[in-house]
Image (spheres, rainbow, N blue to C red):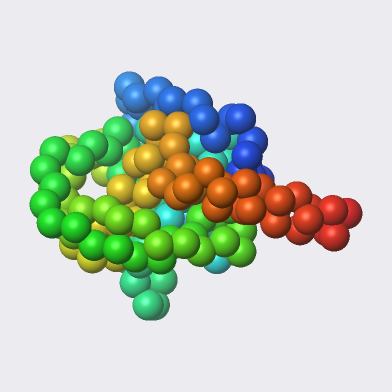
Length: 167
């Protein structure tokens, strides 16, 4: 399985709205496998298809310590949320940047799994944050959108500097 290229903020492709998956077939399962391998290799705890330049509503998440509880969510949507929590977030598309963001403490989610079965699942804490973060990607949002303009500008400058150093 190939490691996919992850788009970097502020790439305008990260602002696209992902399209629903109409059929879970071999192409979708291959993409899910490649996304999981890319996420683990990065290393990260979540990845949206839009981040690897595929505009489909697919995310993979694994917040386990052992990295052995992969959750595949196709066409995910949050149907309920409650409470609030602030956690420091990072993003594979915004490398090296971590900032506090407020999100729901608990969510109820509906999606389709890797085999095409409908699922409903509750999530709390880090898992809820990670799922909400990845669903934001499917809707063309990046976690830095929750930050002030000043912080967004500082992040862009820092990433530009990192890119110049890497060249």
